[in-house]
Amino acid sequence: MHRYDIERYLNVRSAGGADIGPDGRLSVVLNTTGTGQVWSLDAPLSWPTQRTFFEETVSFVDSSPERPEAVFGMDEGGNERTQLYRLNYESGEIVDLTRRPAAKHRWGGWDGEGDRFAFASNRRDEAVFDVYVQERAVEPSGDVEGDRSDTPSGPPDPELVYEGDGWLSVAGWSPSDDRLVVHEAHASFDHDLYTLDVESGELTHHTPHDGDVRYGSPQWGPDGDAIYLVTDRDSDTLRLERLDLATGEFTVVVSGGEWNVDGVALHEESRRLVYSRNVDGYTELTVGELVASDRIDELPAPDLPDGVAGGVSFGPDGDRFAVTATGSTHNANVHVVETTTGETERWTAAATAGIPPETFVERELVRYPTFDEREIPAYLSVPETEPPEAGYPVVVDVHGGPESQRRPSFSSVTQYLLNSGYAVFEPNVRGSSGYGKAYAALDDVRKRMDSVKDLRAGVEWLHDHPEIDPDRVVAMGGSYGGFMVLAALTEYPDLWAAGVDVVGIANFVTFLENTGDWRRELREAEYGSLADDREFLESISPVNRIDRIQSPLFVLHGANDPRVPVDEAEQIAERAGEQGVPVRKLVFDDEGHGFSKLENRVEAYRAIVEFLGEHV
Image 1 (cartoon, one colour):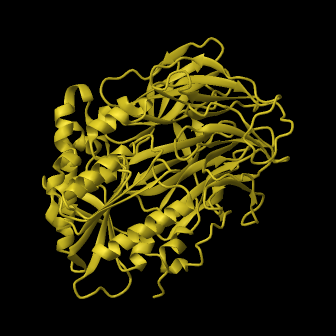
Image 2 (tube, one colour):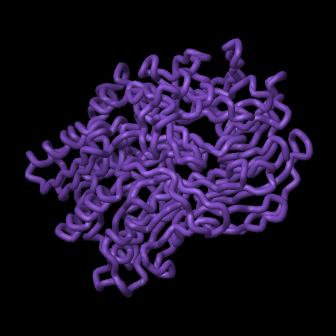
Image 3 (cartoon, helix red, strand yellow):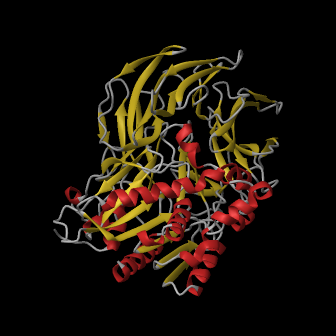
């Protein structure tokens, strides 16, 4: 089998963030240039037109419901302080709408006429988010494509319509354009929903509850008298429910059984909707029509490839929708589905960098026993070549979050490792989402290290796998997964040949002290608080157990990381080096929580490949 280098795999492209405009134009975020930019297409597999030309990654695009224009979001250097910009599709002109580079802006959507838009921002107080409404920008004069500067005829200032005191986001305008849905996250599994009267500023709370309850993916009902959402109220898993705004009563519309109904999109005028179930990591999409407030008549299912799908965007008449689909063996592309027939057509052709798609390897879903007799779900991928006599080396790749889930989506790094003779093992240890809130809570605060025990059990299970070399097991992970790498190397040092920590937490105390003010309370709900749990947090921080580490370590980070500050990398690299451990450190000055620019990704993963080649 032909082998390709890591740069070739990192040049496999992806298309996502689909949006259908009022004229049928499909806009996507496509990373053909090395960073995600706005591109548009007018027909399936037609040559796309590039609309933005920045060095920074565009995070989303949302077309106006009435005009040939869209709003897109972009930060600078990975600092996550997203600014909002207006793109005129006809002239190509771009206007900076927010002009507050020190603040975060969270898009809340256009009103029905495209005359106003809403967003949440922490521009008043870095620790909390307020709700703003802004008139659309007047026509600019003198701007050129790619120029972020404002002009004398630029956008009006936004109106602060509600002062918040927490982690707020805006989830859309009512059909009558007089109210907004406001979502508040107290913790990853503890949410509330409100409606906000835009004119009066009156906020109405609709979800009082005791204990942890999620309320997600809220969508206004067609008549504006209800909200459809997914919630685990009175359930271990998420269900599709209807919230009557007048009475406060909930009605179960769809129960996912043992699996989450993890998202819903609703087209108000046609009453058509799409909802998704997360079945062992794989997406099952259901298309239907609301024939009563709590009854859906199903329509033919779309013919999407197996894997993960999401990001539904309805066309203006609800007769079709766009959705992004990806899987172990196919990179992300946008498909358009005819709502009533299920007929599905791929619209984008994100390139595979000349690598034959048939060489990509499918994951195998497995389960392994852990210390308390639970079964831990995981994905195992092995090369399609004959294993060496001692077996394949294996990379244990741990996801971040921790309330996240490794799912069967395309990974260029995974496919490179497989092509290079490594097996890849991706466990969803306790604390992962996707398996109910009880499973997700099994690692909270004082139970943190039980998830690391699950990693140990996974490696022991791999030892019994005949194709795996037990002496060449690598721990690799990013963000919270980086903490898991460091914890595994210090708790169970004999199991590992090497470790790769990408933007990981080394010291929970300094992490919580230095993370962005807007997210500290949210993270303390998961990890423990500085006020009450400092001693415990010190005791489980890998930097304080570094004397136990035996394996070579590679630490990578972004200097602008607002979530896990770069000092976490500095601490662990310095302390490990003092122990005589072979340590390499690589910090990118123009990146944040991860690596978004192609040249940085190439440098980072080429260095990782060299590190593994030297030590594994």
